[in-house]
Image 1 (cartoon, rainbow, N blue to C red):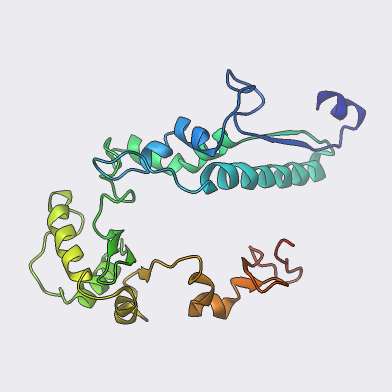
Image 2: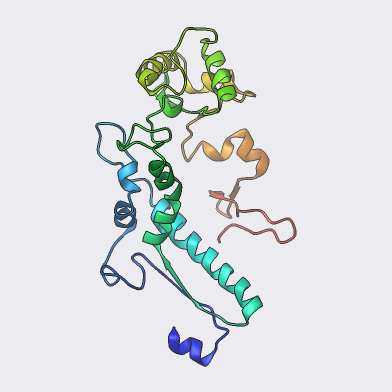
Length: 249
């Protein structure tokens, strides 16, 4: 890269790696699971009393890797318009994932995010931000963080006005979780979807890959498109009004 820049100072040279172009691990092999493990991300995908659950390789490879590479290249190109000079973009997945974890580290520093994984607000610790099994052995996702959304959730469950522990009192979370789980297990996933349709309770059905393209919201937006063979594929994102993209061939 240095020689390339000497030959052409306006060149933007980018390289995407797992560990980065420097550091003790720079020349060693790795995969998504390794990069997210070293940043504290994998250790945060935990339910209390269970081992960490590796997510799909969206966190390291794509969110922390290719998306940060694209952002770095665009930032370098924009800066070049001002300075007239190019530069090297060192996009490392381990760096991108750690950057994605910034808010968690900040909350931990402020004492808002406790030390135990699986016991915090957004890591399945809170009963109002979790996934629950329904009567047909499917699932609904609940994410009613704000008080007004939580109130809509309680109303949908038939719990409005009931004497319950406070929403943000961790001591009462086990009681709330047991109550929510018992009620949500009494109807099917799609029945609950009907109950909460049109509300701000932040309750959605957990859909399979086969079901997602046909959901009314996704269908209305064209979030998924079909290719020549008729198979579903995600549409291009984000959407640009003047120069719309198209899905990968």
